[in-house]
Every structure is written in C-alpha cells, then in structure tokens.
Image (cartoon, rainbow, N blue to C red; front, side, top):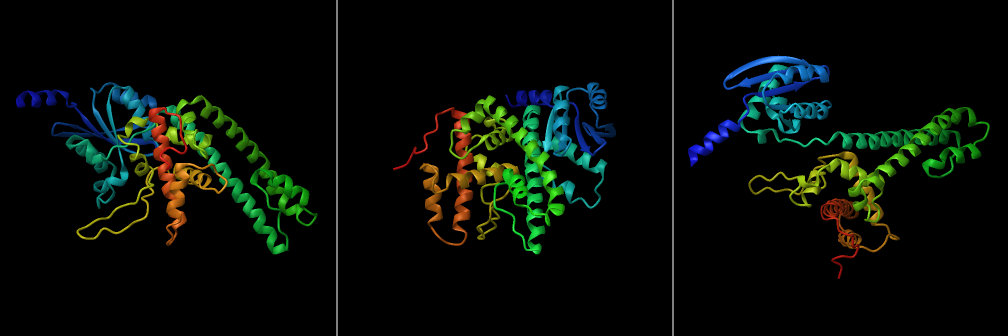
Length: 352
C-alpha cells in the first residue's frame, strides 16, 4: 500500500519546477528538471509569457509577491501551470544572501518550491475584479490625502499672517474660505482653492461609483448591516479577503489584517508586544475608523460597543486606544462571520 502511494505521488509531481525572479521589464527563469538546471529570461508582456510557457508541460512556477505578480500568476494559471506566490518577508535565503543576483534568486525559488511549497509561505492573490475595485478605493484614498494636505497647507500659510481660516469639513472648505477670504489672502489662497475644486469633484464621483459597487455586491450588503460600516469599508473588506473560505475560523481574519499582538517567545521570555500590523494598511485603518464610530456616545447600543467600553474602563496606559484596536479586530471577525453565514445581524446578541 505504501509503494502504491509513492508511485501515485511521483506521477502527480510536476515535470518541471520553475523559479521566476521578476523585475520591471523582464523575468529571470531557473528551470529545474530532476537534478538538471538551466536558465532563461522572458519579457514581462502577455505575448512573451504565452510564447515561453505554452510550449512547456504543466509545471510548478514560484515567484515572489510584487507589483507584477497578480497578473503574472493569473496568466500562468490560465496556461495550466501551478503557481506559488511566495511571501518575500519570509524568504531570508534570498533577502539575506551576500551573493544576491537574479539567477541565484530564481534558483532558490525553484529549489524551495521543489522541496516543499510551504517553505515559501504562499500568499493568495485576489481576482482581477477585486483588484479593480480596490484600485478605485485606493485612488479615492490618495485623492482624500491630497485634499487634506492642501487644506492643512492653506491653514498653516495664513497663521503667520494673523489669520485663521473657518472650521468646516473638507467638502465645504472651498466655499467657506472663499466667502471669508479678504483681499490680502486672495492672491495666496486662490491657487490652492482652484486646485481643490476638481479634487472634490473626483472624490464625489468615486464615492458614487463605490456606492453602486457595494450595493451590487451581496457580501458587502451583508457586512453593512453593522452600524458604522459604510460602503468603502464594506467593499474594501470583501475585496481584500476575496474568498472567505480561505480562513478556517473567523478569528483568523484578525491576525491576517495585523490586528492581533505579535509574539517573540523564547525560553521563559514571552514579552507583551504591539499588534503585528501585517496585511493591508488601508483596510486596517478603515476598520479602526469604523470602531471609533461604533464607540461614539450617541452610537446605538450593541454587544460590540459594550465590549469596547469594558476594555476602555480598565484604565491603564493607552486603555482607550487598545480598546479601539480590540473593537476593530472583533469587528473584522464579525464581518467575516456574517459573510460566511449570511445571517441577519443582531446588535445585542450575547448581551446580558
């Protein structure tokens, strides 16, 4: 029986294992067949990739996660190859190699993929539709950052001139400042205000588009049942996770998004550490913002709010900040659970 298992495993194993070191314009290939190793290069274009890999038998291809890895992995999978996208943070054999080169990196990827793919700490790339939706959200995020930077610049410039601009939200800043601006400030602030107008229009347009995408997405509608979770956070969460079945337990989502404490245990030493901050930075920031809405005094009562309030009342250094992060982590777990089960959200479920 054991001999039979070994034989079937040998048949299932790929004929070729290919390590792919990707640069901006071309990729270095290390093609491993048995003990024989040869090198080749391929241009980072769809046509060149198809010409190179169409002639090869079904192979195992290993490449590091990077700018080009999403579309490269999709193309290679479509051509019938098994693709492993390695986590570069876990590849000390490459990053700490004192004789680092493209060929050595490609060879290391190939040999690790041949020995055990788990050594590469494979990551999951989202589908193309998810990538496009996230791209819209990231563009909006950059525009909001640019708007905030211009508004802060305007406020900072006029203070040495003994002026203070009116307090208002970012969307009404241009109108309020234009009405309050005198002749002395007009030459200084007009260029900034003119730059803010098209940025505001672009943000409004993206908000409408994201709202429509969130309404059409069943999973996004499901997680939006929670007070404080808007279309941007809901769509970001669904598109970042992409496939909820990737996580055996909903609690694993908190660690995936870097909202659980890191650990550095050695012998009797097991220090308390800050959250790991792994995963998507923007989604983590959005979840913390949602947690702040959940924890507001005038927010509806819920089990989530009570949980955060209990943690904040413990006192100690930065208790409120820790409570907010804990609520964000619990919020991510709850969102994943609602997505998987499709249940109707009960805010006070579990409350005594």
